[in-house]
View 1 (cartoon, rainbow, N blue to C red):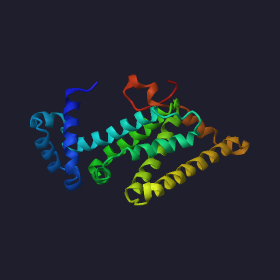
View 2 (cartoon, rainbow, N blue to C red):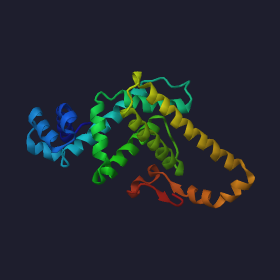
View 3 (cartoon, helix red, strand yellow):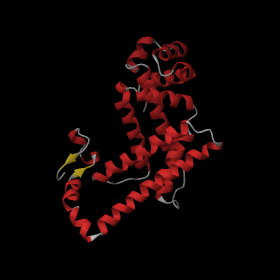
View 4 (cartoon, helix red, strand yellow):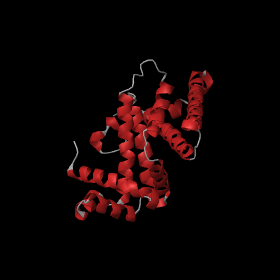
Length: 230
């Protein structure tokens, strides 16, 4: 359910997108959004204490929400899992109506003081995809899946921003190659675990990794994960 702040932020975001292509996610854009939306300035500052940065974050999160909804509406019963991942990333980009807003956001989150926020958003996108596809991992795989997909997604976005091929076909080919690279790595891991000599060498590291738990098992602790028997 939307809060009053969410409603204000949505109004500001709709008004801001007209200006982002010219002024980026800037204070000028934020002020223009306040003016155009006729939102009370005090309410705008309360809903978005970081100004345009909060709107850029809202824009990204709205894209994630749209992608999750689109995934839920698709019949993926007969699809390979790698194809489901590719579909999710492709939908996430195809649903974007304003490519320039993404380009400006990439520039914004590349700034050192915004880099952590940008990384958090990319991780959130990967987490949304895995959750929508029913990921049930509770160990270190929870982290490795999201870290790997974050890398795939972020590199695909950068390629997509510079792609002028018909219907972004070059981007989808690039995405397929990145996913194939991940699959090859997973095959290598399986071969190592299936090798009697190498699997014994990995006993210690695997034991350490087995102690790492996903956040879902430790929400009451207020921590992103844990190490131990929980």
